[in-house]
Amino acid sequence: MWREGTIIINKKGYRYWVKHFDEGSQFGIDGGRISKLMIKRSGEIVCNYDRGWDIKPVDEDTEFALAILMKDYN
Image (tube, one colour):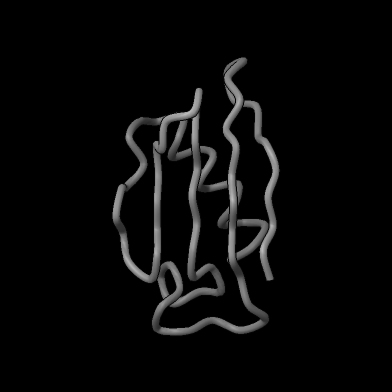
């Protein structure tokens, strides 16, 4: 199932797209339910996971956005 939305962190918008499943798998982040994830800030990809890390979070704020999504969907 795909989800998308925006998270505001330190007055910056982080647009995200997440593909998650009901159960974890070997392809999920840390064996979890998220198999695909993209986070953009100001149109730039700052984090991308597609059954493996393409772009790890680029900074602390992006890591925080990822932590929120992990809590909600993983």
